[in-house]
Image (cartoon, rainbow, N blue to C red; front, side, top):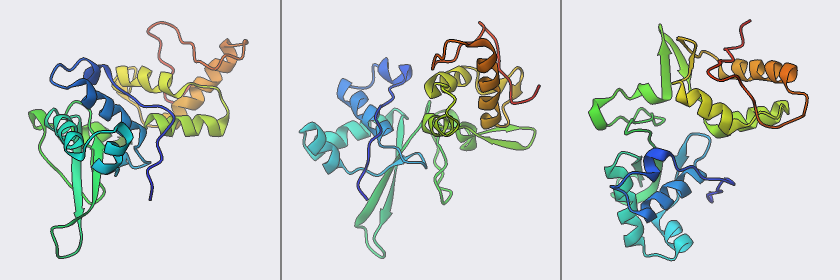
Length: 207
């Protein structure tokens, strides 16, 4: 299956200002985010990136190694049965060196030995919350045609560690529906961006 990039890429501040990364490694990180599929994985080869940027596969390999060494991505290989020949490589984006779970339960140790589940699942007294991606939010908002900006929603709750007040969020879709209701009440100018009061929190779909 051919990789189909999204229309935008993401370079977080953490990556942009990391002095341990070369500028080209940061650019490659952005390209990887644009190629992430619904499972948060990219399976583009070094040859694909080499052709894209007009570089050698050796150079691409060095950039990949930089990102792995600094905890921004991880790589996982599928080998052809009974051989050491690589059939496919999966690249998964990490945040702050925390491993996001692969299907199949692959697990590795990263910075500060942080728990595997901490980044992908935020636990609240035994309940498991699956944090959405920007694409997840965008697709749901397009489905509901609500005009809410997916990046604004994601960045707002990412900055709050996905908390609703002092509690962990339980249902991000319910939260979006709450934003819709607030937006309908307060916005009469058909703007596509969400406006919220400074320091305000729009809840988890509960009134």
